[in-house]
Image (cartoon, rainbow, N blue to C red):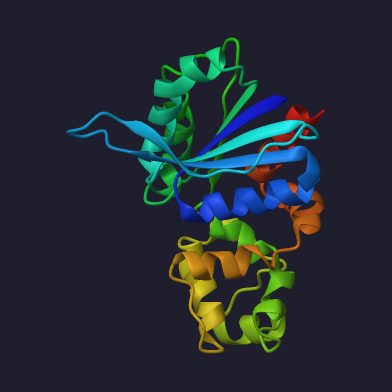
Length: 233
């Protein structure tokens, strides 16, 4: 069974990655476990299993999604767990975090910092950034808005909020989760990073568009998809 671990900064990325994987891989072949990282200040850092998939002989891929709980823990959790993952037979490691709360001017420094002191053999870790937040990807997958509410049309969003998620560069938005909230609020709905609100969104995204369209708009989405394709090949 091929094994992959994906470290993410929080609940948004956990839900998105989980749904993406389930769209890419047949459920019969896929085993996903969710883990939560805790501790690290006055207590040892540890990974605790939150949910597991029952294993079967047909499964080809085992994937751990680890919630690091905050953006600045993703790289350090990877560094601290790298050796044990290699010993356990993992073949690939991916880290996903937002650029926010850093500024766009910090992007180059952030990319370099993520790789600082991270081993490259036998596994080269792949880091993926949401610029400025993962929610920028959700904005760009604009066909999901009418699924949230049929009145959330592109014309209405453009006329009221003065941006067009179907054509504008969503990486230029400073606070994508607020943009997402403002769109939903046109119909009295909210997006405040609550688990139920996150899952409402990720469950209606068109993952075929993520796979074929968003990769042309977001270099980091292209990196993520290419890494998953490489793992699955």
